[in-house]
Image (cartoon, rainbow, N blue to C red):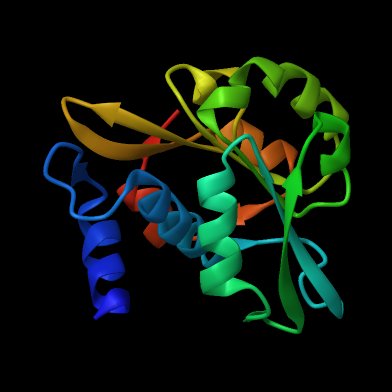
Length: 169
C-alpha cells in the first residue's frame, strides 16, 4: 500500500498540503528515496556505502533512517548521516537541506563544487540558487523543481520519468 501511494504521489507530482494525511517530513523522506532511485551517479557500480546526509531536519533524518537504513542501491548499502555543519557533506552522494538550513546553502554548494552530489532542498528560490531538486509549495500543492544545469554540473543523470513530473528550471 505504501509503495502504491508513493507511485500515485509521484505520478501526479502534487500533494494538497492542507489535505495531506501524512506529515510533510514523511512525504519528503519518501520522495527523496524515490528521487535517489531515479538518478544515476558516475561511480554507482562501485561497492561500498551510499551516504545520504540530512542537514537541518531531524524529522526527515529519523524517518529516512527508520524506513530505508541498510537497504541497497545496486551494490551499495544506504547509510544516513545527520549533518551538523555544511563541511560534513563532502563524502555524501546525496544531501537533503531542510528549510531551517537554507541560509547555509551557498557554503554547502561551494564545498561540493565538482562533486557528484545530488543536493535536495526545501524552499522558495533554492532551485534557482543551484539545488539539483527543490521542494516547493505552489497554490497549496507540494511540487518539485529540477535544476538541469545543477544536475549536469554534478555529472548526474535524472531519469526521463522523474524529469517529466518536475518543474524544469
